[in-house]
Amino acid sequence: MRSNLHCYLLCCFAAILLASCTKSESKTVIAPSYNDVDKVLTDAATNQFGGKCYGIIQVDGKTVYAKGFGGYDGSTRQLIASCSKWLSAAVVMSLVDEGKIKLTDSVGKFLPIFTTYHKGGITIAQLFSHTSGFPGSSTQGYESNVLITLQAAADGIAKNVALQYTPGSTFYYGGVSMQVAGRICEVASGKDWKTLADEKLFTPCGMTSTGFGLTANPQIGGGASSTPDDYMRFLYMIMNKGVAANGTRVLSEAAVAAMEQPQTNSTTTFAYSPYPLSLLSSKGIYGIGNWRDVTGPGDALIENSSPGLFGSHPWINRNKKITGIIFTFIADNGYLTTMPTCIKIRELARNK
Image (spheres, one colour):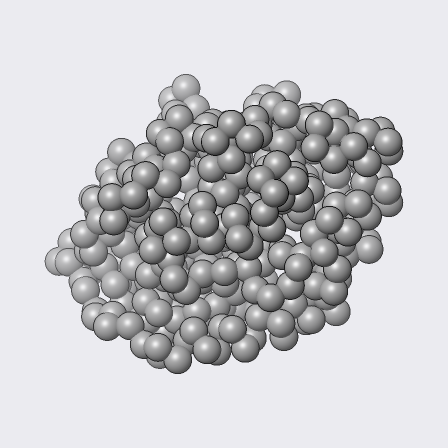
């Protein structure tokens, strides 16, 4: 797994370097009521984040806080790890909008090899909510092997990765199942994943510095690179119920709502979650590719997010029209380093 990750990082490095050569016109913005946010992020950037990060918060599309540290700004491009899951979920939902797939469709409908190996009944919703029954990662590294195709990865998973749990019964966070979902999207659309992501999401949102790298086996749940400015364009589209800031409808309102519906509940067994379960107030913790990590009475969604392994942390509060991302790159357990700070900043923004 580690060697595959290193290989992937090398494949992405040239593209990221090229994109990072163009600096944005990012300016520091600190609305008076966000001085407390600035203090928290400044302290964390200096003492915990290695001096490098960029934070931006918008309310209804207007920037109320933006500040970079260590040369980071809105155009800084980095691998975003599991922040990719939210992006990929939107690509999946674009095909739902087009009627090419349904979240209730089974894997076997599109990939008969899974039926051959007695795994054909898993649904697309289960694949994209970590409840498929697959482990989070495969010992063979199918989900991160940059030297194979997405078809080969899915076929290998069908043949050689055993189900650990009954589909739908257990939450086990990881990337294996999302790789299968990505292949379903290729089959259903007749296009490769990277073309789909460009056509269905990145181009209509104006995300010109986001992509899944050079490999024919893009890591669906963790392989994108992006910039803070680009990711904020995506967050605005989701917060705005499918309509991008440029006025383009990217997803239907129903598709966005479906992404945010809980796919876990009180009967779900939680085998592995990188997000500390003690911080979550309900059992409906995960939708389609995003965490439902702040909920209210009746499991009503207040905020959702998709933090990444390297520490970047995007989130939305639709009721208050807040979108934000803390953007950084910390190679070793970055999400554990940044999570307390990000949760504090979200709380401060939410309570204004």
